[in-house]
Amino acid sequence: MTEQLWIAVLSSSALTGVLVAVISGLFGLRARRSEYVNEYHRRILDKRIEAYASVEQLVFGLKNVSLGCDGLSDSVSDHLQKFMDLFYGFDADKEPLESFGQRHYDDLGSLRVELERALADDLLKLDDVGGFLKAKRKVAHGHRALAVGPDGIRELGRL
Image (cartoon, rainbow, N blue to C red; front, side, top):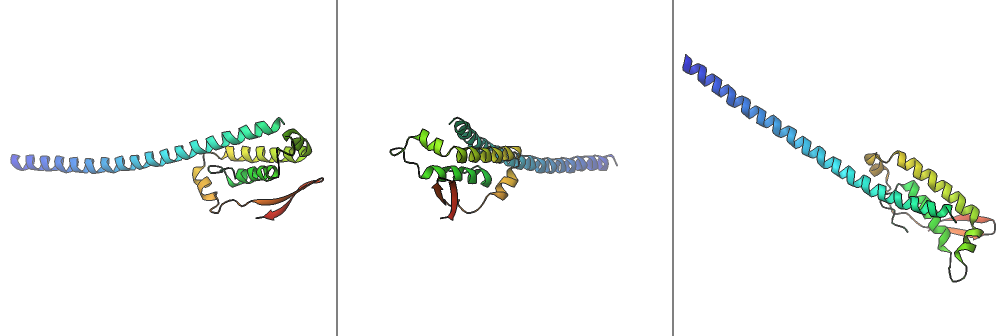
C-alpha cells in the first residue's frame, strides 16, 4: 500500500510539473508577443513624433515671416501639400522671398492656422497607432494645380 501511495504521489507531482511547464510556456509566448506589439507601436510613435516635430518647426517658421509625409496623418499631409503648392511657383531669382511672403501674407496665414489645427488634432490621437494605420490612405498624395492671382490662390484641381 505504501508503494502505491508513493507511485501516486510521484506521478501526481510529475503531471503537475508538466502542466506548470506548459502553462508557464504559454504565458511566456504571450508575453513575448505583447512585447513585440508594444515595440512595434513604440517605433511607429517615435517616427510620428519625429515627423510632427518637423511640422512644428515649419509652422514656427511660418509664424515669423512632395515632402515625404510618411508618418503623418492624411490631414496634416494635405495641409503641407497646400504649402508646397503655394511655393511651387516661387522663383528666388525673380522675386525675393520676403516679397513673395508679403504678397501671399493672408494665404500663408490661413494655411498656417489650418496646419496648426490639423497638427493639434493629430497630436491628441498620437497614441492610437492602430487607428492611424487603418486611416492612412493607400494611394500616394497627388499634386494640386493652383492659380495664384491678385485675389489670392484658387485650386484648379488635382493633377
